[in-house]
Image (cartoon, rainbow, N blue to C red):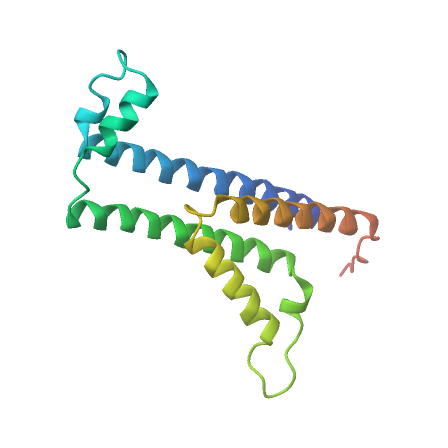
Length: 164
């Protein structure tokens, strides 16, 4: 028995939004745990000092060594890959932006607009920690596209059912 495609799209939209938030939560939590384990002295006096005092002490700490820095980069890369695939999968399900998902002309593998869309998603996911706003905008835009698609499919008459 096939599931209602509109309900499936609602589930996919909700999963995309929750998945994006979950990736953010896991990455930020992992970063905090790593920083606390790298610099336990940074949080030793947290109850008894102001934020300015803590920041001045943080500036006096030694930078992370190469192993710690590599670990932070790996965590950042895992988040980037997760966000890229979440964004790509939902975009593919919606077939949006429409120019990126048009059928290619004969002899052409993929339209240029699809390559451009992949690059936008790639750069967006690679810089998600330093450029928070583009990822938030992309999430809202794609969630909006999902809502538009649900509305569009809800307004369309259901396909005729063929009985055997």
